[in-house]
Amino acid sequence: MSKKRFTEEEREKMSKNRYVLRVSDKAITYADKFKRYS
Image 1 (tube, helix red, strand yellow):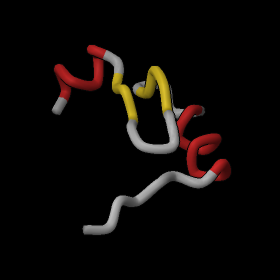
Image 2 (tube, one colour):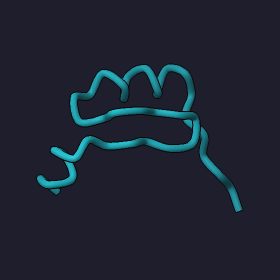
Image 3 (tube, helix red, strand yellow):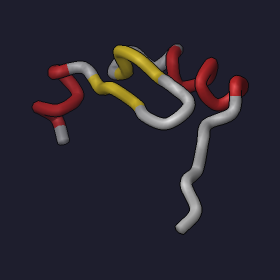
Image 4 (tube, one colour):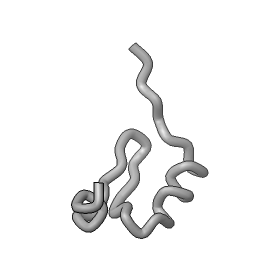
């Protein structure tokens, strides 16, 4: 089983999104505001 890890470039791009609280090489933590919209 392959596990995708985010590159530094991907993490940097995602962290600029206003709905993202944190980004690690393995996971994204979304803000509650985003969770209510989806």
